[in-house]
Image: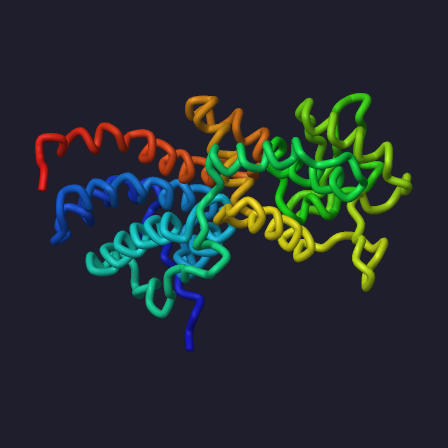
Length: 304
């Protein structure tokens, strides 16, 4: 079976003009057509960076899959827009094969069904932490929560931290990011510095893992991402919060985007996204949410 099929007949600078040609003939509502037109910009921008070939749809899906701050539903909306566009190019005989066949959308796993944490959930966690006695176990929990809430760290970034990665004097930390071997410096929020200082004053290790297990079976070993999820799960159960550990990063980035009013370049410095495209998708979701009051007002004169 021949797989190395070129899609070069389409010049990348022609993709944007072709959007209108593809979407205008669709038998869909005007709102759906407009949504496709907005979302396809993300795909076109992706092709400008990565080119276009017979695997572009699958590669784009993998790219969307790496956007760990977006819901499965949002990823599918962008993927569908790309599919409709590519299928349209095939119908126009601008690409030689239908490259979207046999590639399914994202499935809604149990882990991703829970949305990001909201302000109410964070307030519950804040109040809960204020009641905890300053034991090593409790300070470990507060340190982990601080890194999730104020720094937006991924679970893997939390467990990879070593004691020597923390520089309280300069209020910085060096983290090993997702898919990276080199360390990256981040600036610590004052609350994170305060909590870590208390934690390290009781922590007997001066090197190695910053967070170690206290269970009988693995006492003293580095915490795993599964351990982090279990620790957070217990907190959520106590506080009756419906969410996942990933929800902290969702909260962190949403908070930044709203505060910086869509200044994605600035937000990316704190969220540590390699590509600002990831934040563009997320910003679209935030704008939609902020626009809801106006959307609701449209139907204010109708009652049932």
